[in-house]
Structure formats: structure tokens, C-alpha cells
Length: 69
Image 1 (cartoon, rainbow, N blue to C red):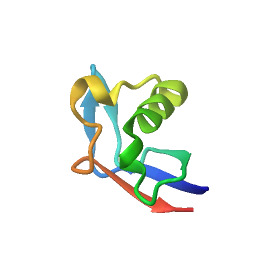
Image 2: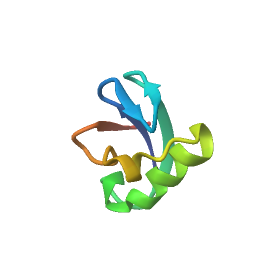
Image 3: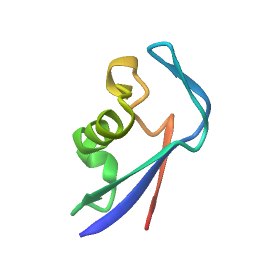
């Protein structure tokens, strides 16, 4: 099982909250690409920061970058 760190690529506005570049969460997955399990990434941002990136359209590789920890 791999652990990935997912970070924001740029500054963004999520439902009135400004999110700076580099805000990160960690997720674990059996996949080699964590974006194969978007729901885990979505749940991590909601659980830790209360940010719903899915509803605002930021939950994709255009706005997020990942690396294996």
C-alpha cells in the first residue's frame, strides 16, 4: 500500500475560502495513481480542512499534484 501526498498547485478560492498553493493531505491507496480513487482525496480535504474541492471543480490533476511519500 502506497501513501501519497496531494498538494494544491496554485492559489484558489473554494466557497469563499482562499486556499494557498501547497496545502496538502495524505492518502493511502493500492493504486499507482491516487487520482484513480478521487473519493479518498475528496474525503481527506473535507475531513481535515472542511474544503469541498469536488463541488467547486478543483478535484483534478489540473489543480492538484501528488508525490509518493
